[in-house]
Image (cartoon, rainbow, N blue to C red; front, side):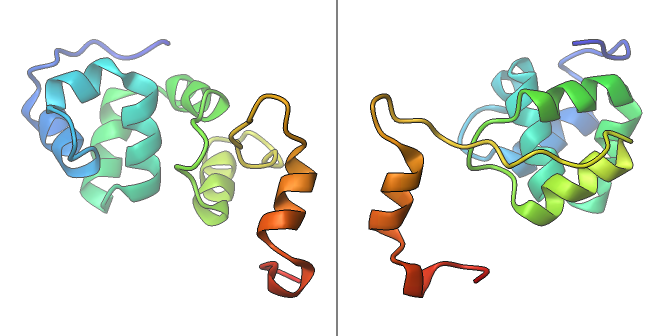
Length: 119
């Protein structure tokens, strides 16, 4: 991914990483760029978002959305970032795939029609 020059020792980035990925050391988080940016775009405070907008190009943020991990974004943040980054209509949220399992069949078993959200 293309990003502006930076070091992993940048205090603002380290603090942002600490805030949005609390389960691993910030230096490790920053090495996992997609995870860090996905978490920052979903859970970051205004200050975290300002930090990533200063340190990362729009194209890097777009690529992190294209490579987004399942289960991080909610619909609202997914739509927001696609709009902010001029990416057009957002595609469906990333989903986990279980080999050999039809996701529509699984959804019907897990969420019977009466309990589906957004009906």
